[in-house]
Length: 401
Image 1: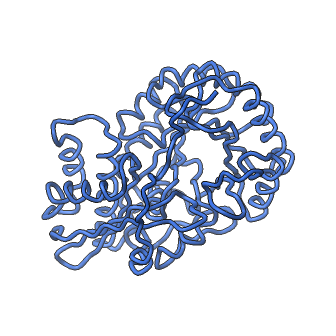
Image 2 (image 1 turned 90 degrees about the horizontal axis):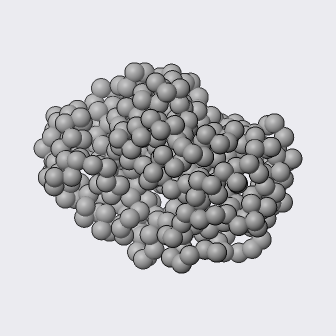
């Protein structure tokens, strides 16, 4: 069995309300005996049609003609291409999507879910959390008030999520982030953040964990000041309090707060995560499987984390194929903590699949179908081609004062 010289890439616009991003990049691989594998690339550094050309290049140089079970050899070849041999977020995003599709093929070839090829199922169900999104309009709204800036609306939304079955809620009221960060939080931002935590804790009581998100906006001393304002509300984590590039600086925050630190959505490969663990920067790791280097790389990271008593909470601000990969890895690691969901996997996240992810009362049920357990609805993908100019995520390009 080998990979045919045929590749399909789908750059799919995610229609309003845009939960999970402006677009998704899916791909399909095909074997000479008729098996198809689907993957997803999480790469926001270039326009998605540029990423499409990058996928084609890596496929032509490394994937076509290969035995789909030779994933480790492929990983090393791509990691070292062009005399690189270091974490590269764009290249790792491309490799991740291709690698995920290969695992889908391998599972289908032996008629087993991917998790059964990686040690077997550990968890019969997976606890989930969701971000708080506006009830109407776009996730990228500038409208005010909204759940992003009004603590009462956020508390109301959190209560609704708990009523649906969620036992953890994520929100990030600390304000915008900029290419000029990190910075000190303003008094207004700290007051607002504390009020959000107070209102949401009052609304959900002990029925749900609070997950406090930031996007690396703050210096270590600024993050410590903010953390001390939040400790009374006992968040399960403080996410990416400083930029992720220097874990030694993030570790200063971890040492000065009672709140567990979480990080990882912008990191790639075992090498970057090893620094997080070695420095004590975080005890909760958040790999995004469409960026980190794929499923096998995430399994290695989970093993490293296990040896530090750290837990894994896969990150998802992407489409449901990366979500399906997150589900597979979460099912087979003993140190799984919680899985990010985009709401209840409904709306476009269900429409783009032939069969939606199974979510029940706050938990995802791991699929029993071979491979990833999901199939792309090609008709829906083609009907929603992305032709806009915006990237998946954007940062402010002026300093924030």
